Length: 338
Image: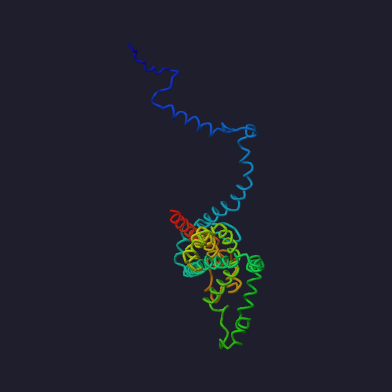
């Protein structure tokens, strides 16, 4: 007769049946992973390497990130609740007064409008125009390297030198107005550098001209990953160059287009040099062409009348706008991947 197997009785040296054995194994593996020292499956030099050595190699990068990124951001956030002065001195805590003042400041909203308008116009053009340029110079033709270098030349030029060149071209007696008058296309000089709207449009043109070659490189790298078989199949189906561009090229570089859009949007919200060079240090007549970085300089860094606390509050607002743009781009990327 078969005997019934007796269940072991839990004693002082036995494991309670309340905790399953697989769970205990996972707990032990987690403990070994968190314990300083080599991994259980390590071999070779890893057996004699201290647990802190990898952190030692990353320490310089972590220190730079903390010193030039995290600390300035936290310091700006703290300053936005004070009335600190640009040249230092005692700073008093003022709570949300700077933010309340900002919401009722017409100059702040004017600078915000200019920055958003700058991004709305520049970003779509900067996403599309470098792509068209990359498609033109992608072909392996004799002398195409010269054109690639020529299109990239504005990228390596100094922003100040480029701004002075455009200032010379666009002033009332400059080359553009002189040529238009000689061609009898205008009767009087166009105020490119004295009208607020024309200053903004001229600065946008300068940004586009200087950035086309940079983002062209992005698209050239992306176009190299687009399969030529797709173009050949579309051509066999009767698709022309325009249809192949929209239905083959654009889907193949969509991720790069999103990246260019994010980088251009962040740069557009931070534009300063173009406005300064074309609109003078005042940001156009009456400061009507000022963007948010320009306004931050005026209200926060003036040695005599500046308020570093208020400037920090405007900087936080600029950060929120930039963060919102980045999150929107991530949302679009997630929807595209799904």
